[in-house]
Length: 365
Image (cartoon, rainbow, N blue to C red; front, side):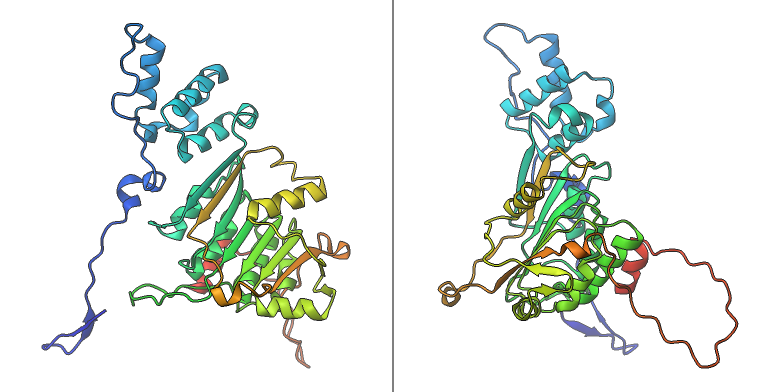
């Protein structure tokens, strides 16, 4: 970005044009999908005039932006099921409508649509807005989240901890990321020990990652074996898969037990994060009672890039780790305290409250 010097004051400044994001005008739910029924869909019928029920259905579904779970409190499932069928016929089963039905009809809808896959290979919003699409504070669905492109910044990576319904997470940073041309924007970030430590503290102090079972990491060169120690603080985490993460792979190559994690010999490699999650749930034969049988939202942001041609013939550096039984539910070690001086002062009671997500985010801003 070019810099300009004011000839009168000598001040140096930059000028930039801010274009409103698509989500600011349409809403995050409608950047990649349309809320409107196809023009003229089933407005006429060969059998004659449409019924009152059919006309009411078209009026209700004509603009999905107005649909919220509160509107369906007194609507019986037989009518809601009819509306869902109509959305299927019109090819308008949007992510918004799927989440709405999963929230309003948790018992019935799980038998109708237990899995939804969404791939956003060309991101058009900020990472924060995509995280908002996945989040369910009411735990109405399980989130299987794949971040396949390095366009997230440090505060946004930290904010992943706010997704209460997250059960599986994959962060796949490309080996070579493009430079950021806009100097006014913070740089893109890969995962680091500091971010994982913050996640661990949020897990202990704020109940973050309470249901996360699987973590897959690719091309995270800034991670060391310390990250595995911090990951012990995730109460439900059972599997960590690391590919092309030198700090984690090298530590696992020397020991069969690393920071409370056991190395799995000859692991069965899955093609997707959802397959890893299915395998851990199948092997453990249990799931969080809060999220058991809830629908799964398999959400991917960014396009996953394959390995370079020269590396395809080589076996990728991959390690699969399972939580050791001795470390089940053990909290991760916190930061060491400074040793007391030889002449300690009189102790004073001081009230301290645990940091929430906002407090941790301030450390990265």
